[in-house]
Length: 89
Image (cartoon, rainbow, N blue to C red):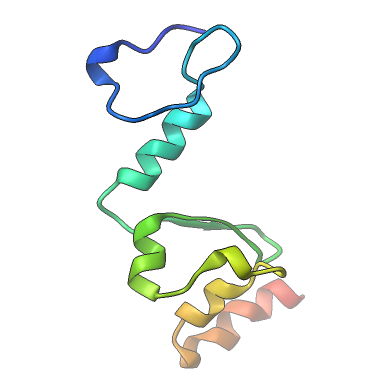
């Protein structure tokens, strides 16, 4: 793996056994620092990722979400059924 130059390093990225920053840690840092709301859900409707701005905007905390469906609380109630219908099929 190529070493990331220090000139573009602004975060405290985890390193692998070779002392290199991992691409996963770089992607994570970029997603957290992006000035946009980011989230990912799978085809099963369970969340995979919310960035810090998503949590600040919605006021929801995904750390206590055992079934991965907390994101539905951020969806307007008029739109929820339309979103969960394909998931339940």
